[in-house]
Each structure stands twice: as structure tokens, then as C-alpha cells.
Image 1 (cartoon, one colour):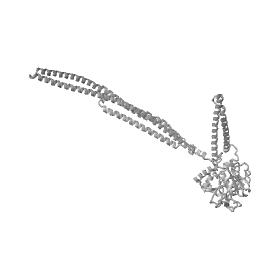
Image 2 (cartoon, rainbow, N blue to C red):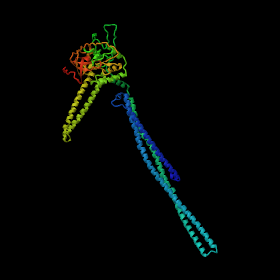
Image 3 (cartoon, rainbow, N blue to C red):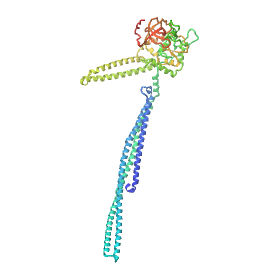
Image 4 (tube, rainbow, N blue to C red):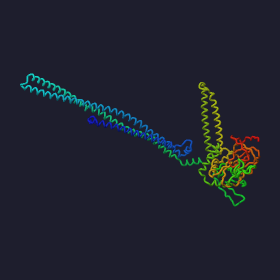
Length: 626
């Protein structure tokens, strides 16, 4: 089966067919190119999708990915990123193995096709030229034969006419002979041309055209084979990434199977466990006895005269009823004066003094009512937001020993701090070892550097390591206290009783639309107040070791003040004292005489000298001349 023998007369159709084959090949190249663009677009969208749901660094989302379910989701995102990478591989391989190769092959194919059909046209032109030569020789031979016949007839006519001279007859005979000779020559030429044409035609149809058509056939068959191989490569490129895609899907399945609901539940406990026990039962309060009110075990006004030896407020043997109340706020509520300060002796009313406080519009309800209302009411979300804002303003980053956290959370924070410090120590030790080796090299080879140049840096590293070790010891001591490995210090009950001391104190202010008193406690504007005294029981002992507030200035007493209410302090005219808390707008300033004596005095009774730098509480007060 050969195009040269079977299609010897279909030159034009073969030319059209081969051009159609090239068009098909170019169409397939365009198809593959669009497929690669789709793969790239799909991979890009998958990567963007994976990136969109990745947790942001140093954010709350990153902390949430410690649970098995969220870790499985993170593994899914990572595997989807790898999955997208395989689609990029598909695009790259199709581009390099199919699109680029076929594009180059199409150019070669066009050149080869052009060459073959040029040879075919040249052969056709040659046979057509031979045919024209044969036709010309044939027409010449035919013309010469006719001329010879006419010359012969004319000679015979002249020879038969008696009236024609002999010379005319001879001339006619010579002319006839000449025409016969020319006819013979044309015959010989025509015969030769005919033989040559037949030979050329035979060679054209049986040699040249079959060879050219055979080459065209081979070219077309190579094109067909090549497009088939490209289609096979198209499938193989996909098949090559199937195992890797399968591994990605297997990893996603494995991550999904690793989800452990029990473990996640335990992690929730570890994350939010406070370490406290639930509050005990509330005792019955008998209001039928007017002389003495029976107070429950968990009441704030626990009487010292009950004769019962109660455990410490922050001990683990008894549940806490107010875990959200900050200790400082609680003590301020119990010890600060709950009435307007008296006007100075020379004033007719408190408002007559420029810095005198305004008297409250109404009296306030008992503290026990307010605490009961706080414990029974549901906190609102905006209250805790206000709590957080107030906390950040008042406490900053929180205490260094994390005493504002529940015991369990405090233990975790301390352990994290110890681990972080140990890592820092290891880094510093590695740097020191590297510098030590460098110094040894400098000592052995002085031309490489001065060994004394690293001594200063080694000394700095040694100091840093020592500081970090001291920090580790400090935090390990606190950690040992929490875990019970060491005897609890006197400060420990204060830390335990101050659970969440940075939380709901400011939240109460936002929820109840309260205003803050000078000691940081919260009083209601539209409520009545009754005086409530708390006896100095074991409850008070819990706060004996509380760290004193830093001084913010000094003050001079303008008048003598007798502090008769709970939380106030008596001062003499002209006495110099420390200021530890400014007037918050209710007319009271908190002052300190020494380490053991501090309290509130009316702001209008003292002249305050604030200092930008806080003073040391143990520094003796300097005398100021009047």
C-alpha cells in the first residue's frame, strides 16, 4: 500500500490532506497549552485557599492548633499545598514534553512538507515541458508532411503540362524533393522526441512521483505516530503524579484518623483548669434574730467571734465563692471609707475647697447585697471587654510570677518560662563555646586574629548566662511552690487568694455603671450604703504579706484629721507623709506613714507633692521645711 502507486494522480488532494494534518497537530498543541494553564490556575487557587486558612503567627489562632482536630485540619491544609504542587508538576511536564516538543516538530514538519511538494511540482513541470516538446515536434512533422505532399502534387502537375518549360518542371521537382527531405527530418525528430517523452513519462509516473509521494506518506505517518505518542505522554504525565497525590490523600486520611476527642477534652481541661474547688454550701442566715445575724461560711463579713478556726481563704481545702474578685479590690471594699470625706475645718462645705470632693447624691446599699447580686447575675460580654481594658491599663503585662492566674494555669506559664530561659541559656553557652574555640585558634595562629578581642564578648556571655541562671532559679522556686515541692512562703496564700485578681473587678464597674473609689473598689451611684465592718479574723491574715504599693509623692497635712472610720488614718497638722494613691474623684487620698500604717485622708486636708518617679517604700521620709 503506497500513495505513489495508488494515488499517483491525487497530488492536489494529498497537498490538502497533509495541510489538514498539520492543522490538527496545531489544534492539539493549543489544547494541551490551555490544559496547562488550567492546571496552573487550579494549583494557584489551591495554594491561596491553603494559605487563607493557615493560622496567623503570634495570634490566638496559632494557640488553637494544639488540639488534634485542628492539627488534622492544619495537616489537611499542608497536604493540599502539596497537592497543588503536583498540579504544577503536571503543567510543567506537559509544557516541556508535549507543547514545546510538538511546536518544534510542527515547524520541522512544515519545512519537510514544503520540500516534498516542491519536488512534486518540479517533476510535474518537467513532464509538462516534455509533453509540449513532443506536441511541437508532432505539429512540425505534420506540417512538413503536408508541405511535401503539396510540393509533389505541384511537380506532377507541372510535369504533365506540355506548355510548361523544362526549367519550370525541374524547379518543381527540386522543390518536391526538398519538401520530402524536410518531412523525413521532421519525422525523425518527432520519433526521437516521442521516445524521449515516453521515457520521461514512465520515469515520472513510476519513479519520481512514487518516491515523492512515498516521502509524503512517511511524513504523514510520522505525524500521526507523533500525535499518538503525545496523547500517551498526556496520560502518563497525569499518571506519574497519581502516587504522590495518593500519598497526600493518605496523609489527610491519616490526620483525620488521628483526631482524638478524649485527648482534646483533656487539653481543654489543661488549658482552663484553675485548680480551685467549687464553693461550699451556703449556710442559712436567720433574719429572725435582730441582735446578731448568722453569717454563712462563704460570707464576706465572717465574724471573729464565732469561735471557729476557719482555713485560709486561698487554701485548697475550701472552695472559693468569688474567684473573679481581685484581692486588692476586695480588701479595698472592706477597708476603704464608704462615706464622703469631711470638709476642712475652715470650710463651710466640702465644695468650698477647690480640691474638695463632691458629696454623693444618695447613700449606697450594703456590700453583702452588692456581692450577692454580683454572684447571681450573669456577666455580659461587654463587661469582660471592659474588664480586659481596665486590667491592661491598671496592671500592664501582669505580675512576673503569674500570681494573677489560677494555680494550674500559673504552673503551666511558669514551666513555659523556665523552658524558654533554659533555651536562652543553651544559646548563650553555644555562643560562648564557639568564641572559646575561636580564641584558641587565635592563640595558636596569632596572624588570624587577636585573642584578646574576644575576651570582652566572653565576659558579656558569662554575665548573661549567670543572669539567666538566676532567673531560672527564681522561676523554678515559684514553680516548686505551685507544685508543692517546697514549703509555701508566706506570700503564697496571697497569690492563691488573688485568683483572677486581674479579671472581673473592672467588669463589675462596666456592667453596673459604677464609679471607682480612690482605693480601686467600685461603688454604685444610685444605691444606698450601710457601714460594714469586717473583724480582723484569719481572712485578714491572708493579706498581711501583701506587697506595699509604691509611693508616688509626698504630702503635708494642712489640718488635723482623726481617722475614726475603717480604712482611714489619723494625721496631725504639719505632718509629712507618703502618697501612694491619688484622689480618684471621690475626695479621698491614700497615704502611708510607715510600712505598717497607711490609709485614706480627705484630699482637702493635705497638700500633695507628686513625684514622677516612684519612691522606695523603705526610704525614710525627708523633712521639708515649712
